[in-house]
Image (cartoon, rainbow, N blue to C red; front, side):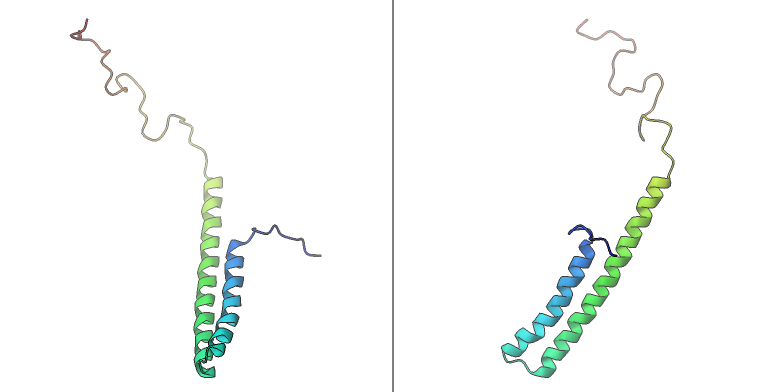
Length: 106
């Protein structure tokens, strides 16, 4: 038995389904407005080709996104929590004037 998926579980699938629906609807509309059967057929084939290419690109993008997420999850966390550009030690605070000298306001 198949489990029901949440409505927005597969946004790429939704896009492909709408595109397929358009591939069916466009030739009907073209025929109603007087385009020849051949013209409607060519438009249908063109839309189907674009839809297939978009589907392939969307699936490829999803796989790349999943593999990137997997790499981030598997990557060990850095032991230093100060951040990427943080430097420890004396004099690490830029603009700090507490290292000697008398200021004019003293």
